[in-house]
Amino acid sequence: MPLAEQSQPQVNLSVDSPAWKIKLLYDGQCPLCVREVNFLQKHDAGRGLVAFVDIADDTYRPEDHGGVDFETAMGRIHAVLADGTVIKNVEVFRQVYTVLGMGWVYAATGWPLVGPLVDRLYELWADWRLALTRRPDLKTLIAERERRLAKNTKGQCRLDQPS
Image (tube, rainbow, N blue to C red; front, side):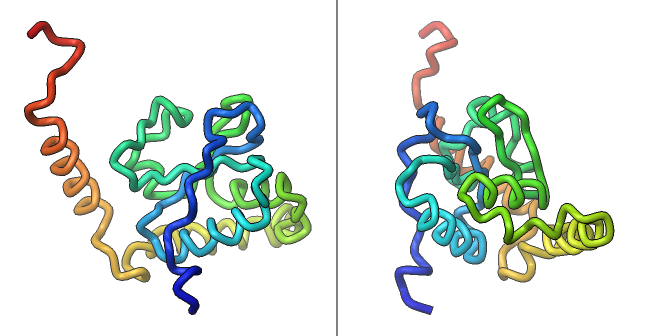
């Protein structure tokens, strides 16, 4: 795999722009997720139709992204539609690909027999994703994140407390 495909996707500056149709919450530490995001960014071609939000970034704030907290977002893929609706699982892929004009890729997942099968396969993938990508389990990732965030805020002046 070329090094460019393994690198982190570029930040999409249109996250706060009204141009985006869907905000994709992805795990920027997952190599397979990053590869998919790179692919999707190429197809977005700078149009800003999809806002790509890395939930693994320590600056991720649930209140800015449909209230989807880190643990929930790490467990299953989520997205936020422009109207604020939160979607998850295979529906995210259906919507993102449709927004990018490639809805045909996931069209069959809307069929009565295919859809439930694909949904179940995704659930299995999501349950095993961290192990398959040789990463710590979710409980460990949450604890590591909490330690980093606590360390980063230690000694900083909080605006909501008198000094």
